[in-house]
Length: 410
Ligand code: ARG
Ligand code: ZN
Image (cartoon, rainbow, N blue to C red; front, side, top):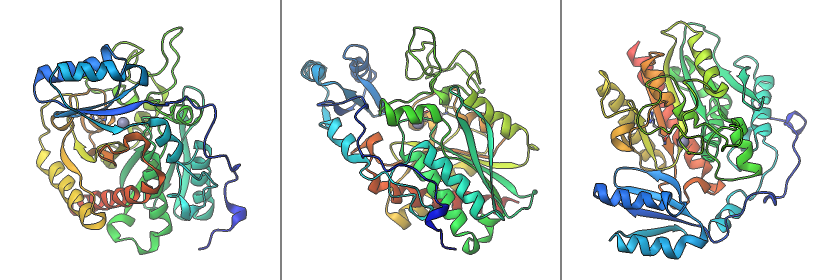
């Protein structure tokens, strides 16, 4: 089927660079290799003493964004601590300005050309439902803090007894590759439906590309590096980290009780509509329905499984690990991209209240994964749009592998 221009969602063509966006002239992103606990403490002073913004944290390294006015002092600090640093990005403003060169309408076959605004992504979902009504439908599962729709696309051959797979993206606003990957997956499933393997056609797919619509828009209009949702807290800093707000072991390790923190967990589990409506939607189905919950984030190229709240592993860790490794191997075969596989807490750091832990621990969904898409740090969150296609393909391979595992398990 050919899409006609008239069917496409309409959006203004915009100048690629938005003048209202907060500027990051001369800001740098550094990677610090940390071996001991003391190394880690010293590196973390980049946040507490030099106002650095944490970008990525794994056992052996941390990435920080630093403003130009602290660079000299921060460098002395790192040297005095006997640590070494690599400059990943030497002028963030330049990278931001080149990241998304063409923002155009979103025709169904061109999802991978650019990072799109919320309206365009929602328009794409509506377009899919209108153009392919036999297999697609949309649903608004609730509304965000700022009353934007939480919109999902269901793709199905119509058999209500199929296993369900939930896919979400964009829970963290600045991780633009995530909604782009999830949109790409939706597009591939729909446009390629007739040729898909049976194990993919016998899944009911529920796809939520922008789980944090307010934050996502804010990252386009105001601050490219916004992470949380847009919950207001009076005069204090806004925002709750949605991936610390889910109701399993809520409030545990790797979460903060301070609204100003990037990992603020909220006032209670599911205090935020963006997380609450996901749990409500999934909980509305019979318990055996959903067999997988795939949450797309960035960056680092990791396939992660529970638990995230602590170092323990699940009973069926062998199944989760096997399927994750199969996916990793298939991805490398197809695009050459490498993913590291492991549990969240052991591979990155413990962090409670994640969607994956809730999916596994409360909803009882077997294949609960968080996948951190590309890259490994050259661009981090500001990955140029030309990389969308690779990530999209990897996302499809991941969904394919999980669907096959579900088919084999039934
Ligand atoms: N980078 C993700 C985050 O910090 C990883 C989440 C992994 N899952 C978890 N439950 N900790 O939100
Ligand atoms: Zn994330």
